[in-house]
Image 1 (tube, rainbow, N blue to C red):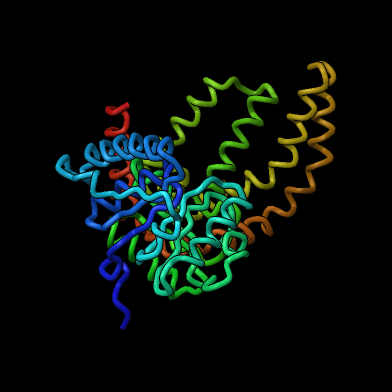
Image 2: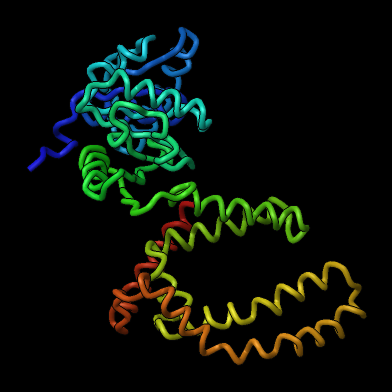
Length: 340
């Protein structure tokens, strides 16, 4: 049985010392690892040290580091080969430029010991692209994308095999105390940034199309965030809050949203281009035109039930559990509102 990475890794090399890299360095140090960082110049070292101090202060505030942690234990070197030459683990966090990242990862693979694992903090680039130019041991290159280590304890990981993914997850979960998502497939933006991009893109659409201004979008997003925090679990929260504790009611709501979408979207388009006295009769015509969609409601319900099965299948929707879950949601919402 292989030794868990959280205990077998001793020396960690940090390559890429910006906001994310300095956060990683501070966190690995706080958790007892020997850390060495690659910096390109005295100027970049100064910037790294400043970022490192800020990251360390954040970790102290979150109870993840001590004021007594000696940041000078993190060595800075100007040579990449020296940085990774004795490392057990390399955390790469250079800029999200494909050519740059591939070149840096290729060099790390050339200079790092054969046993060392290389984890890329790539925000959007899939692993296959990141490792495409590595020659020696491309299968030891993996994805380990955080939010920001100094701000949040989250990391999503992906490796060439499920076994390697699980080993990598153990390091971040057991060694660094993070919540870890083990990805089963590669995806542009992974999980977190794919979700974030959807929200960010739609907020821009709403502003650019004149639906609401930026401050109003911020208000809506703030309350969405509060609900997500209070619910804690998206699937269970959807049933408990939106469906009133009923999975059936939640699926019915989803069905009505989907079958109503063609008419609703068409109406919004009409409202943008026609004055009210013309829009109203045209909308009535559209409603007649789209009315056959209602005939497919049963089919849409079945598709919705199938699509949501992975999320809803294991939920306990008993009245007792839903009542207890809703009480927990209310407690968290009250706490969030007090903080806000």
